[in-house]
Image (cartoon, rainbow, N blue to C red; front, side, top):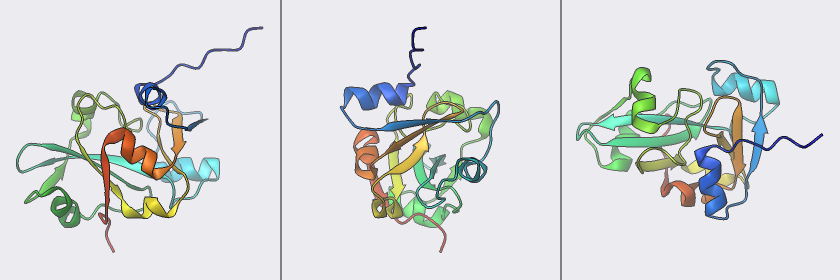
Length: 161
């Protein structure tokens, strides 16, 4: 029997085009499950598993933040990192319209538009980190600097102490 061809997400196609090495993890998932539960299910480290949050600034510009799944975004640090007075989370119902991805499948790579992206500096402590693969049930594992290259990201301290 022929091997099933993997359906690539937009994020995977971008990584392929940039010749960035990554691996794909799949897990069973019909609806949104938070990153901590997924990491527990797959035996992954919380510290090297990153969630993607999308926020909007006072200026009406959108920003993407990637941080460890068990940490909380420090809104003041995040706003400072992108030069905004204040930030607020994009409403869940607007995630798809803004990013092209759905809640739980949102990745910093390959959104509808290139938004300024900030990755928590702890990512640089790891050889590889895990981010969403662009759809529910799919993760990408890649080097932090490769993630930054693929999404024009920068590193900063953006989590609560």
